[in-house]
Image (cartoon, rainbow, N blue to C red; front, top):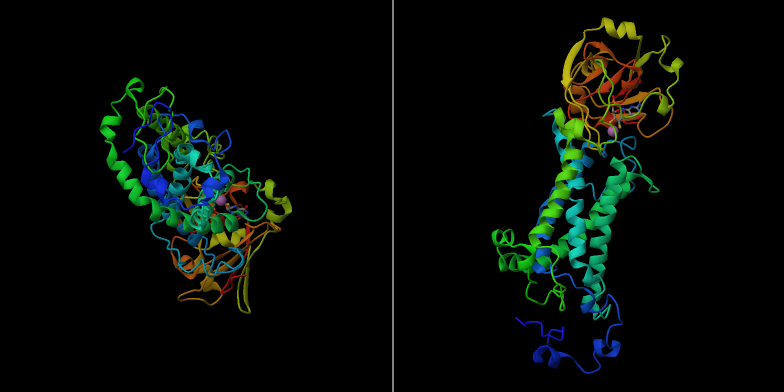
Length: 453
Ligand SMILES: Nc1nc2c(c(=O)[nH]1)N[C@H]1C(S)=C(S)[C@@H](COP(=O)(O)O)O[C@H]1N2
Ligand SMILES: [Mo]
């Protein structure tokens, strides 16, 4: 391996020089202009293939988990059922993997989505550190050396752009400041596929380099090396090592520690919104979880009745539930529903935004028994659920047959021993095990069995 000479520029190997054809692009472009396109501009002694590879390995594992849990989240949305659940246009091809989302275990979506959102937040410092570590490559000169180089840079644009896009849309969605034009699901879902394509290409080219770089130093030694004994990694073909490094102000141990501490803080202020318990108090970043109110109905509320325009008269004594199948129709008041056999189910609410509640004690009428009232005594089909809410993406939903058939799937009338509060969906709401929160429709007024819209 070449050592940096005191002049700062690594000497070019004769082989390298000879291999350049006459009229070569670099020669035509001449010396890079002063500034970040020159290798000497970048002076951190920490940049190098080993450090980049450590961050890269964490992202490789983490992003794989994000991708899988993201696909699961999309499957849980029942997007194949009908336009009500998902309006992503032309998703058919990318939805090849979709499967009927199970109702067991009841905490399934709470787990997969909690992991997705928490991990996404926790990986932010690692992503930023990784981008910092490779930033000189963004300015590499000449910008386009050959067709291969152009394709490589294009894949990097998709990779970096895709990663930033996925993280930013995801974070904005969970922090309720969603500002992108168009549906979050559509953008995040397509973005994920574009990104993962570039990611796979990138990984397949870089894994050998990464493995070599990771083997080049021992983590245990790095963790013992303080700033004053920190030296640059040896220069190599990756071009990440500064040819003229400034004296270290921080060790690689310090850099890893700083990123790790950042991730740990984010973990502490995020995870509580999904895990609950004492950690919930620490969930400072969780938009909905600091003060869910008190009493039996004191658990997180997604949207309050007034925020989605539920009027008092929509849910007054005049409210009725209509249950339909083909030409059969049954209309029930809340009192009549209370007179039917009541069943209990202990189930969480788990939102796509990552927050969830512990199990709440719901009680109400089984969806399967409501199906039986309109003649569907055995193996009831799915059901289309409508609320009194006028408009809005969450005002109706389609549930699958396996969800209707689960004995814990209820049209809930009470929770934790008290009448449902207005904000939790009074007079009646859906609660289905492992169902994403968004499909647990509140203020329900009509159930049409065998329909998806
Ligand atoms: N009609 C209606 N039902 C709805 C919603 C809504 O906006 N309108 N929000 C859904 C979402 S996104 C979630 S996470 C759950 C939250 O239920 P909770 O507010 O009782 O906790 O309600 C769901 N049911
Ligand atoms: Mo939600």
